[in-house]
Image (cartoon, rainbow, N blue to C red; front, side, top):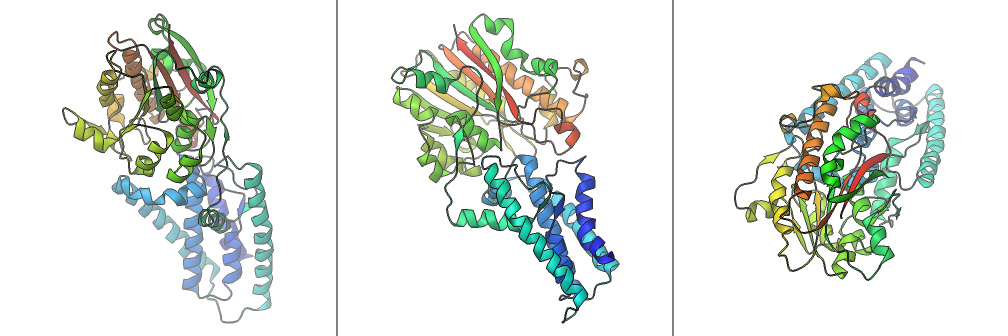
Amino acid sequence: MRRLAVFALLPNAVFAVLSPFVFLQHPLVNVDYLVVWALAGWLSGAATGLLYGFCLLLDALVSAEGIYEFSTADALANAQYLAQLDLGRVLAVAGLLLACIAGLALLAVHVAGWRGGARAPRHVRIPAAIAAALLTVATPLSLLELWRHPLDPGTEPRFAGSRAVEVVESAAAAALGTRPVYAGAEWRGRTLLRDLAAVPAKAPPYNVVLVLVESDGLLRNERDEARVLAPLTGKEVARRYKVASGVQRFSGSTLAGELRALCGLRGPAVDAETARALPPCLPKLLARRGFETLSFHGNSGRFFDRERWYPQLGFDLTYFAEQMQITARRPLAECGTLIHGICDLEFLGTLRRELAPAAPKQKFLYWLTLSSHLPVDEVLARDSTLDCEETASLPPDSPPCGLARILHTVHRRIAALALDPAIAPTRFIVVGDHAPVFPVRADRDLYDEARVPFVDLVPL
């Protein structure tokens, strides 16, 4: 019983204690530890400790992948991009995590007093049979959950599961080239995709700017949400635009948000191969109507392989950090914490020039913002006019306050661009990609877990 408590109950209890405070998606029982408990009768103490530590590491990584709205398949597919993050922060977190895991593994082996042996007696074979039975039950439970919710990357077994099985399932699906499943995204109100579908051969009488705003989630406090969006919905904007605002359901990471905003679909992350097989998305639909289609993003085009699959969606020109710095008239300022890139406000001059009335063709400009990516870059929040003292749910000097101040500034600058008399008639669609991925559960609970806001400005 002592060994069962140390090898099976202790690690699951650690995650149960942390879950109310840190956003960790963890089943009630991870049966991997039961397997370690069973195998320990055949292994040495050192080998048992290593196996126990490996299960802890795998459990921590898979439990935490949901913080950034990744599924296990997405995490495996995109692990290569970790090298493009701020390595100092990544290594510091990894070092702390490994130190905690090593400590728990040493504690387990020491407390259990397990030395292992070449032959397993009856009292070891019994737990081995129990662990095997539970693992056999956990595997179909995992598959059943994924079958019931194939489009929800956060889906995982609630009661019993195996992290090893999940990873193997995802790796096998990737190796076999399983065809991704996509479905229509749920919108409320008028959308550009619906407008184009209603009149297939007609081009809108204006340019179109679609802004997908990083971490622009829907605050549960309606008044505070209205304050953050106020620059886009105020009286001055309403004099020149028909203002429509609402919510859109989301699931997944920014990659899923791009698929939803550009193609009206939800499902797994897109790559160059799957992008070719998608139904026509906004860039292709508008290109067929004579629009020039351009995309802008302040990060590297190599990150998440966007430089390869953006053109597959129908963009004529794609501008990432590399192209921006080369073509800019001056060096563009960079900012960010975990992910560095060109600051969002550096794009506005480029967008203004592209929307000049003298342009020979109508334009569709897609802008994926970056500066509000978490962790919050507090430097960017200093000049905001939003005062968190006036809000009910955003404590001053907190990460949610800093994020709200950054988003308010982005919205204010987009509104200023929309009101600029020097641009041609333009429709502005501003929508969030996903709720903010705060690791602290109390911060995360300030936002709707399934919906993001959007504002649609149609020129009068």
